[in-house]
Length: 133
Image (tube, rainbow, N blue to C red; front, side, top):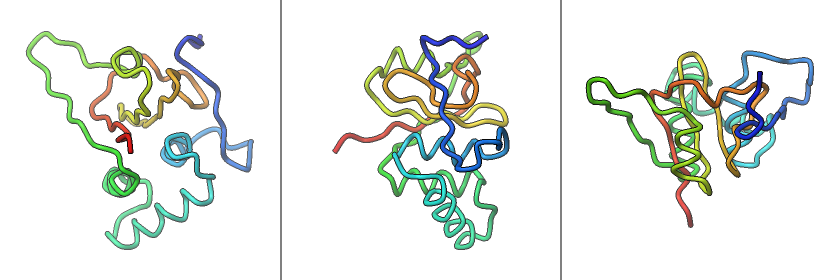
């Protein structure tokens, strides 16, 4: 069941029947206010440049760097739990956050994860914050 305190349904794909496989593109649409095809084309160009698939973490990281996001690795001490998007939303309520969990990537803005489903409680392995300028 979705936790609507931290979740907002978001589907930028022009083909509304697509419900999986494009989480990276959806996430970057939410993070940048750009449309699905623009993100797809930019990731494809980056993928060609680095000889990797467009939705690889390397391509996504380059895209986010170009969009003025700063990456943060998550290092834990023994016994600590991984943060979730809910944790980061509480810590950075006014920031745009991109978070990577196992087999998924999502964006939070305005205090809500913008996605097809509520991934706000999944443990994160890395995240990016949009720099304010």
